[in-house]
Length: 84
Image (cartoon, rainbow, N blue to C red; front, side, top):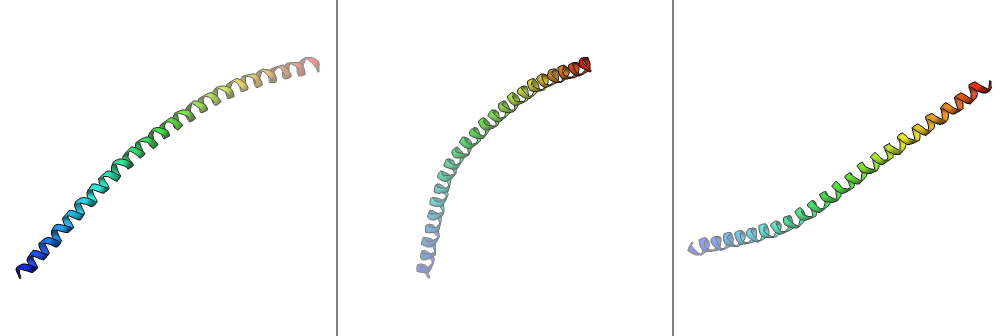
């Protein structure tokens, strides 16, 4: 009976050691993944900033093009009125 209890204790102790080792390994993997996630988050933030800047630049160009189009249409309208 004492051998059985001793064997159970050894088995339980081995399982605790294995669990501790697993937790330690998972903690290391988690630290690596957190760094990777932080880097990916920074890259995503940079991409978002770039896209926002590009969208603002495109909007500025669109505004300028609309102004030129409006002036051209005004000239066409003036020419049409004055000639006919």
